[in-house]
Length: 431
Image (cartoon, rainbow, N blue to C red; front, side, top):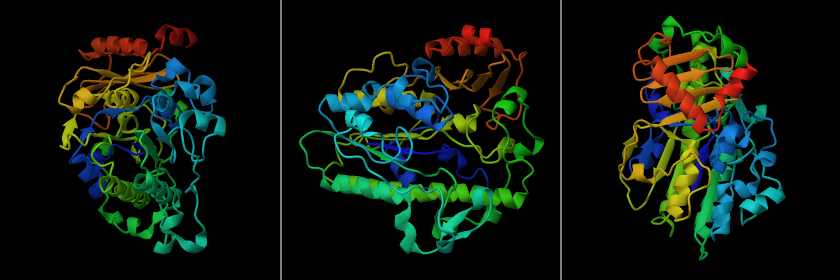
């Protein structure tokens, strides 16, 4: 099973970072019997390029899908996506929710290449009628439905219900691959009221690290504008409360699917991969959005559950969403994906270490690398940023070109770009 969130931060790092405790009881119990990758990174900080990359096993520059608003399937035919390889090799492949693109089913001509069952439609959570909800304030309104009878209207209720029905009903001879795509915690963070009530907004406090400001990024500030400047403390508190409530809401529905799986005949032979397409800024750098190359957007939750090894294990070495496809192929006993930079995570689930691996995240021809304790960013205009994530996770202080490790990091970044199919020479010429 592949289960994805939308816009989810690496939740374990936000457990108490704002004072209030982020409540994810189901993710917590899953991690207690799974491998949690605490340094997993998306290959793009935007939904469709990120998903195109991990579902195809191609980097954004290999496929050409470096930005959104491009026809994904002209660049990456569905036959190049690894669910098709599972289907071709005898798996019963089943869709369910947003995994590849958007909140509506794929066109039949694409769906039928990838999946064996019929497309499924779930109600989107973009808005909710005023007469059944209350606006609790904060960024994008903070609406909540007041009566539990409306819980069934949510996308994630419908997605989880569909997955539960599948797990209870599937009795075919073929092994299965089932997708569970969740909406949450994507904005506007509408939830049932009880999830907002889990958090007292007055418990949220701005981290001390924010109070001295952040290193300036003139080029990228023009590319990805601030959208949360000059907001009062009370407004920020409500906004983070809304986001945390959305994480707790999707965590609840994840728990429903997990319980159904573990109560089913498939409990002991189903590998589960859980991930998000990218993270989100939660007010830092005057942003409440994705799109950037800093740690808080590039770092994502990723979990692999192997029922043959139900032991909690944390991996802190850098890994990539690109690794999902190779990992699935490995557990399925199928050949590796061709021309794929990603690697199977199965050896690391079993205890191997790869501490020096470099992972790239790109937006267009702007590229950030995580390697060891450092984050190195190069923008299209040639300007760079260099941070020590080990000491400065919020990236408030740029180390600069005079740092003794800068030259080595710059060389590693160039090598990583080349590995990912990104020609820095072409980018420099364009700049």
